[in-house]
Amino acid sequence: MFHSFYQTAKYQRIRSLLDWHEAPETLQLMAEVENLRNTPDIQRFNRYLNFFEFVGVLRYRDQLTEDEVCDLFEYDLKNLNRLPVVRAYVEKHGFERLNRLLSRIEVQEAKS
Image (cartoon, rainbow, N blue to C red; front, side, top):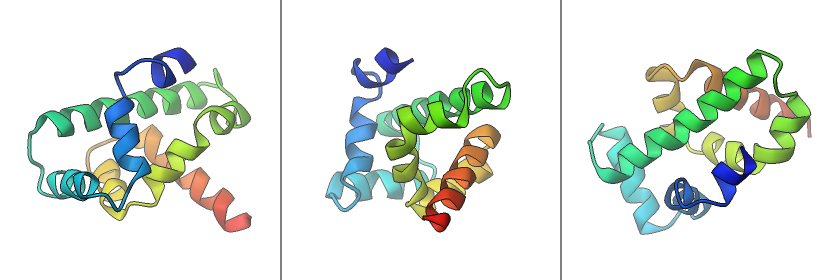
């Protein structure tokens, strides 16, 4: 899972865009997300979210612990969490397990 996410180009563009949330390309992506445009970046974005939905399913089935999820993906989940457009998209489009992961990260941040 680590290799698939961090060491291949499959998710690299979206990870980079979410890292630089003030960059013009990121703002463009967020506009595309908000307006439900079907662009290559939106398709990449959905694959990115599907990866985290899969992580959420593994967590739900106790195949990953909460600590493992945080150790591997906390930074990326926090990046998703800080963008209201992303949170709304996740909630609206049926990413139920990802939504739970994001809610847990939010609670952890509030406790810190």
